Image (cartoon, rainbow, N blue to C red; front, side, top):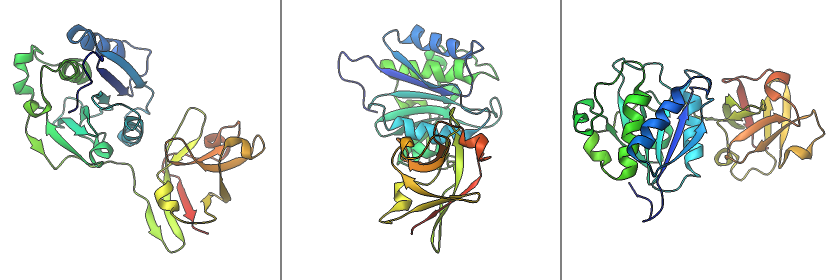
Length: 267
C-alpha cells in the first residue's frame, strides 16, 4: 500500500447499501475517527441497491479510479454477514479495499490486485473485541480501515494471501458476429442505464449503434445532442455506455432494469 505523503491526512472512503436513515453509516464513521482522528472520511455512496454486490462492484471499481493512492475503502453490501463468507483486505492501484468476499471486491482485484483473508483471530491485539454477527462494517471493517490509514497495521498482517476470491458478478460482454452483446448493470438516480459495454467494445468502429428493446441509438456526445424527452446513448464519464432520456428517466420510459440486454453494432 502507498501511504499519503507526510502531512497529508489519509482518506477512508465508504461505499455501502445502508442508506442514511439509520445510524449504521454514522457508527462506522465514529469507529474510524476514534482510532484515526486525522482521517478524512468520504461517503462515496450509501444508496447502492440493497443486497446487490454487482452494482457495488461496478461502482467501487469505477469510483476508485478517481481516488488517490493510499485511500482505504470500506465496502459493505453483505447479505451473507455472519455466515461462513470471508472478509477480505485487497490491494489494487495503490489503494486498500476492505469488504466481504461475495464479488463486491472482484472488479478492483481484476485490475490486477491481491487479496488477503481477514483472520478475525489475529485482530485481538487491535482491541476490536468480539464482533457482532450482523454488523461487521462497524465492528471489523471500519476499525481496520482506521488502523491501516494510521499506518499501525499492514494488510499482510491481517491474514493469508489467497487467489480464490469470488470474481465480480458484473456480467462480461460477449463478442457476436456484428458486434457485442451486453446488459444493463444498474440505473442511477436519474434513471440513466449504465451498461457493461464501453470504449473497449467500440474499438475502431466508425458508426457504432446501440440496440435496446426496439430502439437503435447512434452514440451521442452529450445529453443536449437530442431534444428533451428523446432517448440516446453515449459513453459517460465513467467509461460506460449509457442509455438515457434527455431530461427524462430512461429506466421508467424505456422499461429498463438490471439485466436488460443491450447490443453494440459496430456499423
